Image (tube, rainbow, N blue to C red; front, side, top):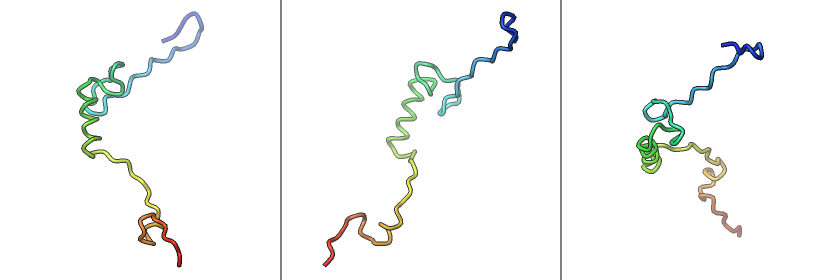
Length: 74
């Protein structure tokens, strides 16, 4: 695809990422999903804890066994 007016090749338009639920092309109204149904499926997965964001535990709290609560020293 050459643009005769500029003498440079034009890049192809970027393809949208597929829907993370069903892998169909995403729709602008529901990005990143293809439909309201897939958006609702994703929300349901978050609300029922099927998805989780991993966190790093603080090793100091686990070693003390206080659960992060500071105790006054005698």
